[in-house]
Structures are given as C-alpha cells and as structure tokens.
Length: 236
Ligand SMILES: NC(=O)c1ccc[n+]([C@@H]2O[C@H](COP(=O)([O-])OP(=O)(O)OC[C@H]3O[C@@H](n4cnc5c(N)ncnc54)[C@H](OP(=O)(O)O)[C@@H]3O)[C@@H](O)[C@H]2O)c1
Image (tube, rainbow, N blue to C red):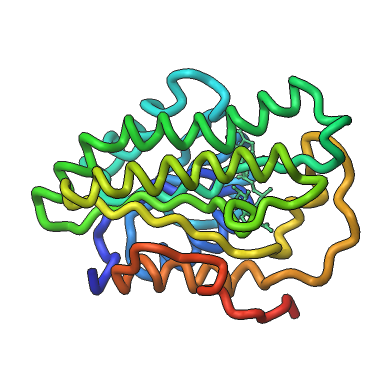
C-alpha cells in the first residue's frame, strides 16, 4: 500500500486521544473516514471530515452498526482502526466482577465481534486489490502484563492472542491484521479509569507521534507494531 487516498477507513474511538490523532493523519492522507464516538458533540468538535457513528462496544450489535455506517457512507470498507478502550487500576483483591466485565466487553469482545462483522467487507476490498487492514491497539501491557493493572493487561493480552491467530487466517484472505503496542501515551486515558486510581507514571509518548508511527506502519505494509516500534520520545 502506498497511499490511503480514497480508501474507506472506520476509526472506532475517534473521540479519544489516540483515535483522534490517527483520524487527523488519515484525513490528511485523503482517506474517507467513518468516525466513531459515544458523543456526536465530541467528535464534531474535532472538525474532521467524515461520517459520525455512535455505538457502545458493550452492546451486542455494535459491530454491525459500525460496519454498516462505513458501508452506507462510502460503499466500501478498506480498513478498521480500533482505538477504543478502557483502563482500570488497583490490586487484584480489589477488582470486582463489574470492572472485569467492562474491561473485557470493551477491550476484548467488542473488537473480536467487530473483526467478524468487518471481514466480509474487507474480503471485498481484498478482491479489489485495495490491501485491507484491521488494526488494534493492545499496548505494551499485552507483552508485559503489569502489576496493579492485571485485569486490563489480561483483556489486552486476550485480544493480542486473538489477533495473532486471526491474523494468520486473514493473511490467506489478503487482509492484514496489525496489533499496535505502544507504551504509556499522554492521552489522559489513565485519568479516566473505570476503577481504581493510576499510580504516578513517567511522562509518556506524544499521541501525535504514536499516531504518525501507526499510520506509517499501515502505509508501509507492516504486519506488527510491537512496543519496540515506538521510539522513546516523551510528550513535549
Ligand atoms: N494512552 C495509552 O497510554 C495507551 C497505550 C497503549 C494502548 N492504548 C490503547 O489505545 C486505545 C486508545 O486509548 P486512548 O489513550 O486514546 O484513550 P482515550 O483517550 O480515553 O480514548 C478511549 C476511546 O474509547 C472509547 N470508548 C470507551 N468506552 C467505550 C465503549 N463502551 N464503547 C465504545 N467506545 C468506548 C472512548 O469514547 P468516548 O469518547 O465516548 O468516551 C474514546 O473514543 C485504548 O484501547 C487503549 O487501551 C493506550
């Protein structure tokens, strides 16, 4: 793939720190965007070109809502970026069932269902030689599960394992599965946990630089973006 111009790309979590930074670069590259968030106001405030879709990944049916929004708007779907997710902190003894359920519903089952729903459209894109992709952002915790983030790490490691296996199947179909695993990035995610409180953390990566690296990986045909692919450039 050398250009994203004219490709239809669904950005799930476009209202978030990384999703919005990725969507901005995709728009500059000429992609046709379908932008997801749970608040239309928040997505419109980004002032990015694209169709808005509201969906909660915890809901059964969110997968087809998202895919259909992209197909209705652009008639094709060539790429999916899943940049939605939630975090929780705290020792295992304090992690309750509701927190575990939310982490797995949003971080794991939502993207798994989304891949299943997107596959037929991505197969059509592959048949048309548009080099389709499905990208997730599991993060460094799926390589190095982290104390006081055990349930979050597990939800991400489960998605990473799903992606590795699914990626082998999809490769035969001409669909590229990419798992991006940056370290801590200054999006404010850690200030919005569904449970617990974030520990003090060193300054993380700049979201715009992480987003640029991810979009470059897509354009360059990379099949994996491990933590080492993100150079240690702290936020300004
Ligand atoms: N920041 C980091 O340090 C870091 C590092 C590695 C990987 N990641 C991963 O990268 C992804 C993006 O993180 P971020 O830092 O950009 O976080 P963020 O700024 O908090 O954005 C999170 C996004 O997820 C959406 N979301 C949350 N709950 C949802 C639900 N139930 N249904 C649908 N969407 C939901 C949010 O939508 P609303 O705007 O409607 O809330 C928002 O768009 C996450 O999966 C995160 O785990 C982050």
